Length: 262
Image (tube, rainbow, N blue to C red; front, side, top):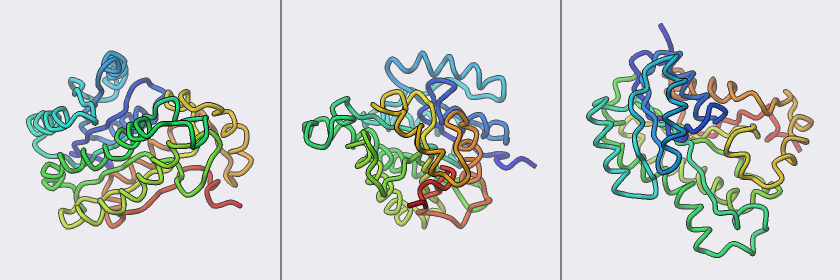
């Protein structure tokens, strides 16, 4: 029996096949899940193209239009998912965005409007999605209930160039704990997956990403391969599966152990 047999999942953030969300969606399909993808705007054509690659593994259906900063689209996505699946056993939040002024310029350049945009898209969106999808998640028939997994990047430290996105990730970690507390009685668990730096489409938006690449493997006791997104896919499947059905409000570090080193 596969780990995610009869699981129905929404995976956000799939753009290209080098995205972390793609690695998660692919592994979830391999483990027997039915997967829905979402995208919006100019990203829709990219996601639809990438969905055809995932169709080699399993059925993903029509890509759902979902701009997480638009309450109407969030509500409409919930209706679409109810019609397609009837329930949700898992949600993968792989969404993050910050205007250019929020990355690589220090903490005193970005105006509040840009910071607010970053927090809305990268942090508040998790609460918006979980809130809208809560009735579907509460109907999960999976052992241990439904699982929400949000992609994170260690928010306990200040990293070069990461600036306001680092603040948004730290807020995301705190939000995850509060959501875990609130939706736990519905048998919904909420966890963060803090991955090390990987060469994805999101990494290309970070100025000086090579600073992470050049030092991470040296700091990580297990070493680190910036091209291996499969480690994130495997870890996400474990969080989505009943194997970790008693774990919520946690941060799972998938970074070779670098976060624990001095």
